[in-house]
Figure (cartoon, rainbow, N blue to C red):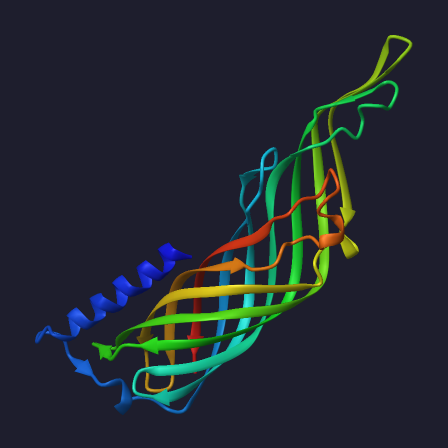
Length: 250
């Protein structure tokens, strides 16, 4: 989150510096805006779990595309406020230690288990936004806010890389074992996250703008409900999402 804030400040400082260049045509923001904007966008979300404690550890990222629609209201000067709706899938790819098969006769399995968790929410982002003047039809935006969501589905997939079953010295199974299941009440019903994002905006016409952006959405609530975080297979972990976004603004 701190790195994203520093990036935001650097880009806004760069936009102020560019304003001073006489070779760039500068159009004041206040002379070229309307009161309400609607944007349709797709956000590429690179998911992982934060705050995992040993022996739990991240093993990679999961990827999803989050469609959303937002409405911005121009307050005057350089400021906007906005909100919208999005369908977002959080989660992560990580390892945990399990003794599940230790006491089952004939079964042997690796204690380190790989788990991919996926929890989807209908979210409502709310935010404040600051935008620079237009520089040859380009502008820079900085966004800061939070998102609140309600769970609609959740699942997990566990992989035991070394799994065997033998009886009377005869081996019947030898290989990887995968198990999938719904998380149901084990996943948190609500998701609250902080958002920081930087965007480059291009004015294609007087009525249409395009943008690309990058940012970070950090979960403020554990992905699993408190009732289950003390179990062997479950743990505390907050969703982290690196954002790469693109869209159109009307």
